[in-house]
Image (cartoon, rainbow, N blue to C red; front, side, top):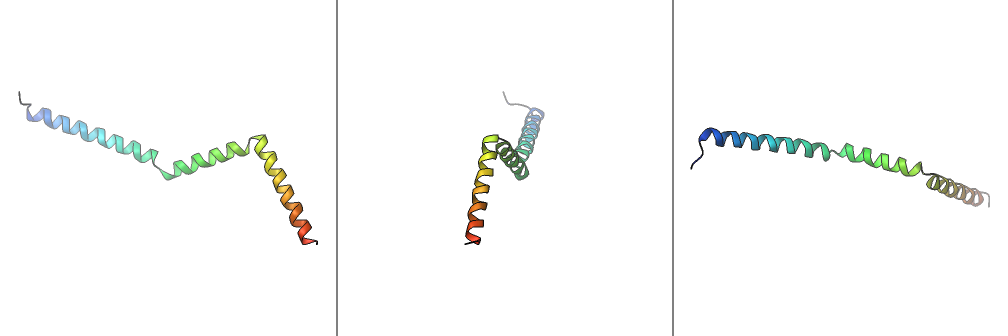
Length: 73
């Protein structure tokens, strides 16, 4: 019941091709630029939320008022 050499070589070649395909997909998924782009998109999505935007504007205005008061005292 031994398999012939050609069948074994085909199986090995198929395994190599599958491994190369898997490594290619992993290299695309693990690309650092992909993580940076996803992070930027996430931050921009949060900043476009009106609640977050107006809260940041309020905090910025408050910090500005405190700094100006400290400078003129």
